[in-house]
Image (cartoon, rainbow, N blue to C red; front, side, top):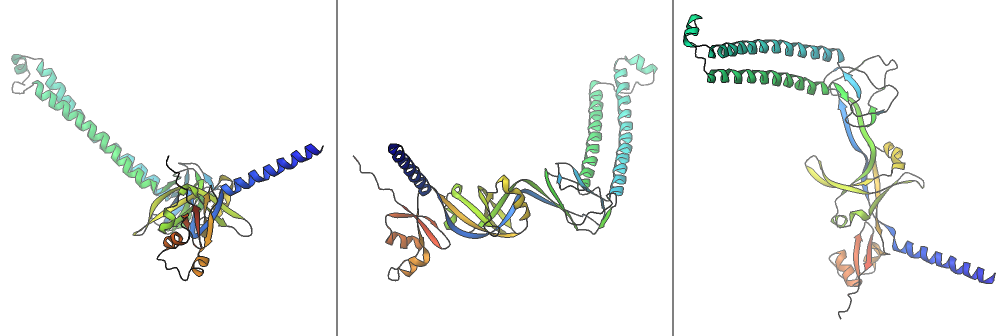
Length: 345
């Protein structure tokens, strides 16, 4: 029994030691805080292209599939315009078919005359008409060209109207959420009237949410991005955590900025949606697989009044020559021991 208890104590001590080694090997170190925004995977806004009515709104739903209509602007007028376009296409097609029919008959006549000799042509009064293969080939080309022109004209007219209708029949560009910028009428069949330029809806691809952080400090750019994460304080002890996903250059007016995107876990998507369009403060963390020495900048400056330095790098090199800088944060600097060079054999 004593042996069993002793073994249990050794096992517990070993487990504790192993856990301590693991915690020392991997830890998150606070770097700095930044203004941030929570953004969906994609986002798009619709506005009134002109003053008019709005109907066919989603009733009692906030989710919609790609291609589903979420509103129609000036529906009656657009339906009338669609009919007018088809009538115009039909009239132009009829005129073109008459032109093509005349060319076909002319070609058939030349092909018939090709099979006649001079005397037979004279008998029917067509002696002067030249009915060689070149004339027939030219008419064939004219007929083909007229048919292509007819098809191209119809396609162009429909595509032009379809592009216009996209501004009036509002369809979801992706699966996601719909948020109207007005109160829905109690009677679902009732049409609303809005002014030109009035916002209609914002749609979001809610398959993923990200915390977007502008990165302006060169000290942060040199950090390995896969080791970065952010936390948004939600009040109390609650925080929204997100791991690095990707980065890109974005334009704000004429200014370009590097933006890091941190993906919010799926379990926190609903909470992230509540934070859309709001300014947040994100705390940036660096995950290190080895234990770091973290020094407060204030202590470094206070304790080195007699050590002149032009930069933090210079100060660390003078005071901690056996360490290298991992990150220079808002209030602290993280250091790692340099690996000793192995002696050559």
